[in-house]
Amino acid sequence: MNVPPILLALGVVLLALALWLRWRIGLPWARVVAEDVSQGRPTQRALYARRYGLTGRPDYLIERHGSLIPVEVKPSRQARTPYHSDLMQLAAYCLLVEESSGRAPPYGLLRYADKTFRLRYTAAVRAELLAIVDEMRDQLEAEDVERSHTEPARCAGCGLRTICEDSLA
Ligand code: SF4
Image (cartoon, rainbow, N blue to C red; front, side, top):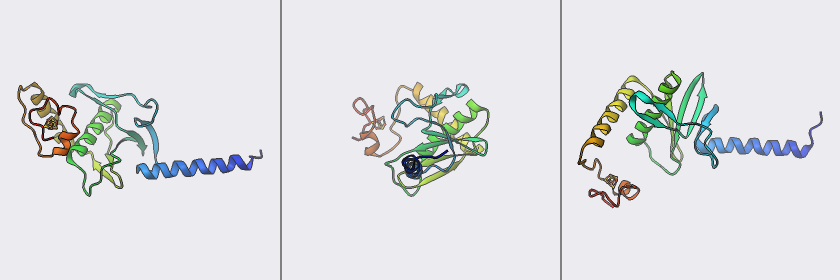
């Protein structure tokens, strides 16, 4: 079958575009199983870890060597080392993948503007995450909770700023 040159050229352009987008996002070359960042509807349902009362949807789920790997993308964030809060968010996605698929991912990926970090999903990381979840649950039940940081920028972007007595912004 003869493929018209215009279609061939279009195919090359689309392939180049796909490669460029993947490079921009920082995803490894792996099958994207689900994503939550497209303009239309997400291609992925929320993941649940019922016994821990957690639910969420990572930006991407990719498949590598038979494992589902969660990917969280913070396109405007630039830092030499990842924020601990971002790592714990990623750890939560690893737990969600583990609980919903029955198989723990060996790691998760955190993408900043120009760098990708890998978080190994170890027993220690899992235990740290569950300790934080417990602490958060206790604080949700407490009547008064102290601010846990000194960063005005975090308060500036917080949806509770207008009613929070501890706000720095
Ligand atoms: S505004 Fe209040 S709740 Fe929001 S980040 Fe600041 S201290 Fe925390």
